[in-house]
Amino acid sequence: MPRSRKRPTMADQADRHELYEASVQDPETELEFVSDTFQALSGRALRRIREDFCGTANTACAWVRQGADHEAIAVDLDREVLAWGRHRHLSAMDDRQRARLNMLEADVLTVETEPVDAVLAMNFSYYLFTSRQTLRAYFERARSALVEDGALFLDAFGGYDAHRELEERTEYDDFTYVWDQASFDPINHDMTCLIHFEFPDGSRIENAFEYHWRLWTLPEIRELLLEAGFASVTVYWEGTDEETGEGDGNYTPAETGDADAGWICYLVARR
Image (cartoon, rainbow, N blue to C red):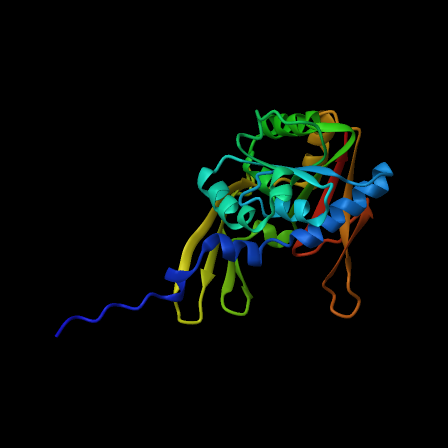
């Protein structure tokens, strides 16, 4: 009798980029914060952004779709990921929207683009620069890409759990997102972080994404931004829900923060 074919597992059929967007990114909420904050700081509406380390350009595409006068530049080195973004996101946009989006396969340390209102470097992507010299150089390049009243938007994470080797699982409808802090060196703050995905049938995508970062502290980031020439740097700290004790999703300017096990915040550097 012919041997039966092995059925593909859920992991075999899954798309790691699709899973990443579903579990890690929330472009609408992020863009609302960026847009509202830029309006409050500059007194005018945000129109043109540049998404650095853009990956699939999910955020840049979301911005363009939100308004007829919205423009975006998306920059990343990874050709395969950019191609996925073009296939998935650009194909769902009309000609006018696509005309307002420029996706570039380029290095954020050397790329030259038209001045924008805001540069976004989210999902801790700039942590891949592990020396002060290189991170300062990136901040200098980002500053040079801004208009006079422009701003650089970053996110950052920390807390005492950030120094631990651990795994955290988040359940979604048809998969589990696994954040794996695989290694951390307390001397130089080098860390390796992995993302895995698990499925109800027991299958798993191991090391779907792998990051080799330096866990930068907020004082270091603020100092390097000022050394790079930015006029001011503000930390936007998340509020706390009184009932649950968890973050409430509202970020406001702060000079002090709570010593939480884990926190995420935004930094906004004005040119």
